[in-house]
Length: 112
Image (cartoon, rainbow, N blue to C red):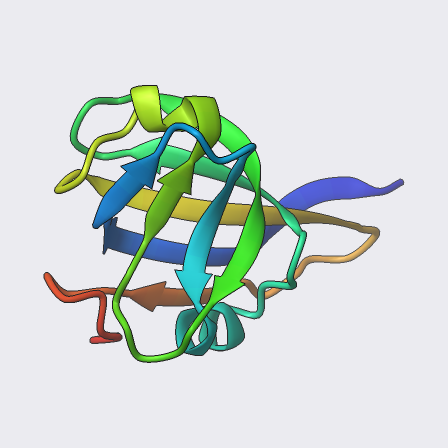
């Protein structure tokens, strides 16, 4: 039996801005994408620690080392600049997965 399990998690990332006019996605710097084991275009669940809002979108890879977490499209109405979020991806497997987890500081630098 295949079970949906946490594959990747970026914890306490800080949203730096939003772009409502963009068609959708969440832009994440390349260094964070690689450290968390995410893929470009991968579906993610974004949960705001600040407001409690949640939404699904896909990963858009941004330039590395910028610290920019940009929420695009209609989701920018749900999560505003300055909010802390958890970005999660899931995978199906028939055995337990050890998820890759990173924690960010105020500047979206990896601290754990």
